[in-house]
Image 1: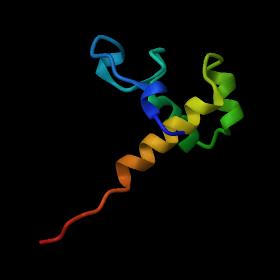
Image 2: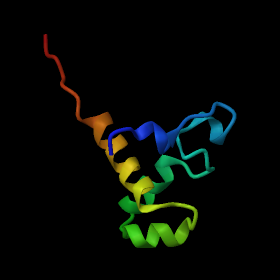
Image 3: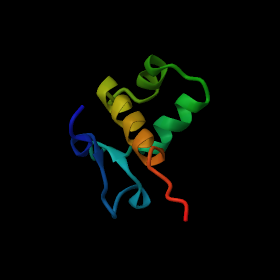
Image 4: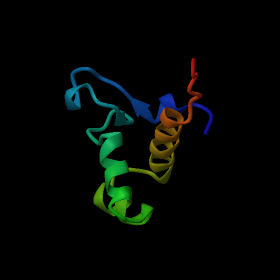
Length: 74
């Protein structure tokens, strides 16, 4: 998935300005929370019928990108 911006959107007037999936009112953090609770990707799709498997992949890749950065020690 080359461009997460087609899946991960930000609208200051929606969901308190938190990241959402494709402009839907499904927050990235909601997907990550459900996966962290142990739901499978298929169960998440059942919880949010408007989601696509690529949306879940985008949420995971976004989260990975946020934690995978170098730390410079002085």
